[in-house]
Structures are given as C-alpha cells and as structure tokens.
Image (cartoon, rainbow, N blue to C red):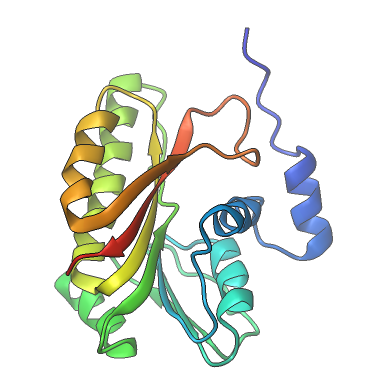
Length: 199
C-alpha cells in the first residue's frame, strides 16, 4: 500500500527554510550532482518554470556571467538575480521560441523541463497529457540547443516511456534515465537526460 500524499514533507520544509520556491529545487540539484549539467556562463532555458525553483537553482550554477530564461503559461514573480529572465508564454508558439532564441542567438547550453499538466484523476487522460509535455520539451530542445548541449525532462513510468526514449536517442550522444531520492515516494516520475545534442 502506497504512503498517503504529504505535501509538507521534509523537502518541502527544507525548501521553505532555504528560500526556494518549491521542493523541486532539490531535484535539479540532485540531477546536477549526478550528471554535471551546468557550467559557469551557461545559457539555460527552463520550460514550464513556474513557480521558479529550478530558475533559482540554475542561476546559482551559471553565475552572473550566465543566463537563465524561464518560460511558463503562468506568470512568475520576479527573482532577484541579474542573470534571470522570466517570460510568460506558450512553448508551442513560434513567437515564444523566438523570444527565447533572442537571449541565446547561438543556442542554449542546456534545456530543462519539469513541466506537468493539471491532473484530472483520469489515468488515461493524465498519461496522455504528461506524454505531451515530455514530447513538447524534446521538440523545443531541438530548436533551442546548440550542438553538444544537454536536455533534461520529466517523464513517468508508463507504457509510453520506452517509445519516447527511443524517439529521443537519435538526437543525443547518450540518453540517461534517472530516478531521484527527492521525488515523492508515491510518484512514478523519473527524468531523462540527453547528453551531447547532435544538432
């Protein structure tokens, strides 16, 4: 029997204490510890960035010489980092992609996505909606990444995961799958990490 959902778990409380906007900040930290995603001066695009926890973490890794562009349908409150830019927009729109590319004309070093749909409670609909978010992040990454860049996206363990991994593989030197300690115990989410975009 799975544990009951606890919104205010240890990571939630830690995020509040350390000033992060969401517990998801620790997921990105854990991913960086495993895969060394960030370098100082990197250009990073965060897709589906609300409320801004991943932008906060990314800003710390890239430093003031870097740039972190967060985009979401929901407007994010400003962040006190000179290297952060938050855009309200739909990643599916060419105009939003163009706005992102204005900030990194030579392409992004890293595209990250923790996008999630609003859950309906209907399993088939929720699986389809989550798969769409993952596919959207891959579509955007192909337009935003510079050759050699990296991509991170959230996925869920379901019957569509295998085909999606196969879909992503040709675009990267390597595609890793990783579960995280900071993921809620009741969740089936994992992350795909595409290393070395082939362009």
